[in-house]
Image (cartoon, rainbow over all chains, first blue to last red; front, side, top):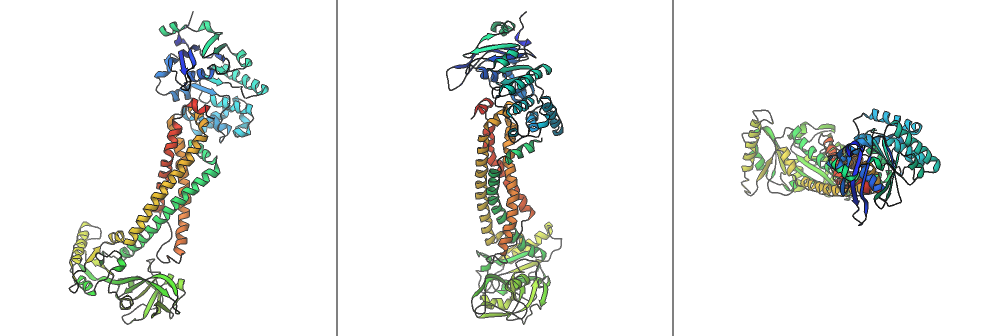
Length: 242
Length: 392
């Protein structure tokens, strides 16, 4: 039986995105659904629109056409997208983007300012617990510059989990890592996805990353050209009618 | 981690830039605070000297630009003494002037010192403390008493001679201490000697009013007002064009031309300092926001709303301002002490920065920080997360 879009945690319904400096659709009518706890890898050549699609799914950007639904509710109708991102989504980036003035512990606390209310002490405790979870407990007081690239990505992973999100979005999470560190981060990412029952969407060029996913979505020229879970996704018409 | 400690860390990240911004702002703010303090201290010293001597009205010649140019006859003073609302012994006339002090050989010892001519019954004699020698009497012609600070500065004591003009020498017969700072740095002589020295008659006098109600009450104020009007209506029979202006001590201080000029200069320098400060903070914060575009993108991505980004940037700008205010205030305190020691202003400026002026300075600097931070904060808040993260 085919699910309706309301059964998905996240559902992109024929979304388009064109950047002002070009005529090419970065994302060209993509329909994609992701279930709770599902691990989806989005692959494709550079410039095919993977990261743009991830930004649309993560409410970092708005589609020019089409809608993104979260648990059946259109993101375009949400009054506070910032709050939505803070509380529901964790982000992991290729370049880690840790704040250099802060220690690992403090970096993990940054999203918590917009999460559920916690005292400063509780924020620190939670950050320590998350750093322990990613094996960085002993490096909590170190700043970004004092950490290896692998360690930085693990801290970034802990930061992504700061507000207990249900969805984790990762853009080339192993892109800046050597194979050894990449394998470690990938193991961690997979383990966290399972233990926290997170929906995980990873944009990647890496076959290793894609192989671990429940489902692989291939993109080309802004469109989905192959989806290993396509039979699970409703057709646009079915989605439109529910 | 507190949000405030996050803000502090952002500033300490570029310590030199933050320090230089603070320094630039502190110089501007310190200058403004110094001027405000000098102005306040002079005003306070003048009004305090009247208030502590229970003076209700200060009378000078109406229509003169500078109060030291005031000059009128003793006949007018006598007319005031006879007014029904004036207290017994409630009028103390004086001739106040600023003169150079010379050495015996005619060279200048001090460019300007305050010289005051008093009658022996002047009420001020009752509250100055005689440290050495004697006070002035009716017969004290050619004799002066010196304020203790002036005596110390020019190293003169009882029995020494001072020269106010090449041909005018005076014997020092006493050293006194006054609670009024500028009197402590003045030469006091008999009114007759002062008239002889300057060729003037009276420059001003103070009046105590007979009051039937405590000072400050509407009834007392009405009584003071009545005497004021009576004094201003008086005319000198020999020169009917001369009129008197009677003011309450506070109003007199407000009207002093020299202080008005200092006040105007203070505000002019204050405005220039504010503009410099705003530009300085603006420059620093714009640079800071530009350098941190990617980081701000990340903060936005993890859910920070524009409001929190604005709080962060404005917080940094205000914190810069507050640190500058502290540094500027310390600098201003030191500057007023240095200024007070300068021979050019010796005796006329009291050192120190009152709490009220410190609070004003800190408030103004916080506003400078706020104004300098508004544009960078809005600019940072308007960054789209996806574009900011891609920023190189």
